[in-house]
Image 1: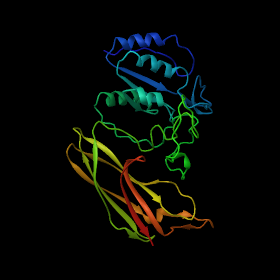
Image 2 (image 1 turned 60 degrees about the horizontal axis):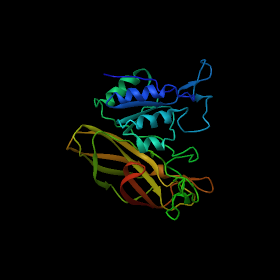
Image 3 (image 1 turned 135 degrees about the vertical axis):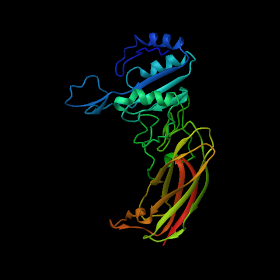
Length: 304
């Protein structure tokens, strides 16, 4: 049996229906709570929109009293799955710390309900990876994986708390809540081995990277293998890592698969101080992993 309650809307401070939603959860085995934003664009007679063209939020926290609804449902002690329906990442540190599962669905169109049910009921094994980082707070923006070197991630200064404010982000830490490339599955994958076709190359070469992945779980699953590059020494500032190749593969339980990724060395070009596009000689770090913050292999190549 499925029980439904409105709980609250997506924009206002109306809390009058929260108690009804809590009572429904108390009489159920599990709570699936949909939160997020409503999107539209100018010219379509929009009403109560909190996202879209011409509709900008001053805060990235969940609009209205949606987080308060989640907190009241959490108090019931019932397992809570939070489904985010939105067109952009929101700051949801409380959700990450308290929800039993989080499903980011974005705006899924007419089949949104069917796809949601298929994933929650296990008919479909989720395999999506985030193509954007989720910030911990509105103040922790812009938030992206391919930033330049910054002192805010150095270990010399620990983040503060509301009880003990410190320097930099005085109440929190600066890392993303969920990083670019993050995504979970109903199975697990082990990155067994990684081999490079060569470690000494020139600008006209193409590097081949072979990665062996094993499905160590009990279900068929798809994994996205990501290849990032970091220019170790350059004449101009470059990001700490940049996604250069990826491939998604289906692997059956207990089986392994070799994934080959190609990286044309010409794609490592940058614009130098003279605004010339060049592939500079030197060492580059090849990073292979499941997400930008989940790197399994690091290898170095040298460009002549």
